[in-house]
Length: 169
Image 1 (cartoon, one colour):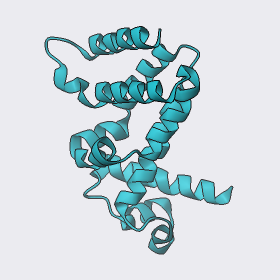
Image 2 (cartoon, helix red, strand yellow):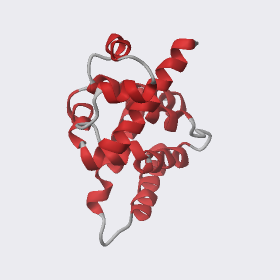
Image 3 (cartoon, helix red, strand yellow):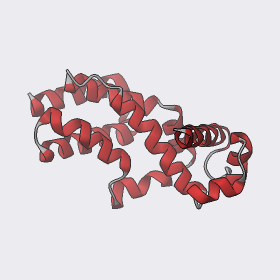
């Protein structure tokens, strides 16, 4: 239990540093100082800032997903996309360090993907459908801001709901 609290304290400090400075300007020394731990304590768990950021992204975004009320999957998925899109850490990474997201979009499935699939699969009842829903939702999360004007994010989110209703209905 103490190590979980310790990790949360470090991840909280990392979040604060990232929001203040961005990923490129955050160092493990900054995080250690803010968390009140030694650099060596951090290096034992995280060899570099990127691995720490990966754990932070997972923690923050899994929280958004696991707090969704899946009794209405379409509403929950759209709310999850909105919640992630509005999350301060997501916005900071997209604005300042978007290259951090590329491995998860092009090369590999991350812990957040696994967590989302573990929530979606029981609700949609099919691993293939769960993956298709994740891919569609991910595109609305990542790319919707590029499709604005003359439409709004609210209109695109409503269209996501229409797509999901038709697919899952």
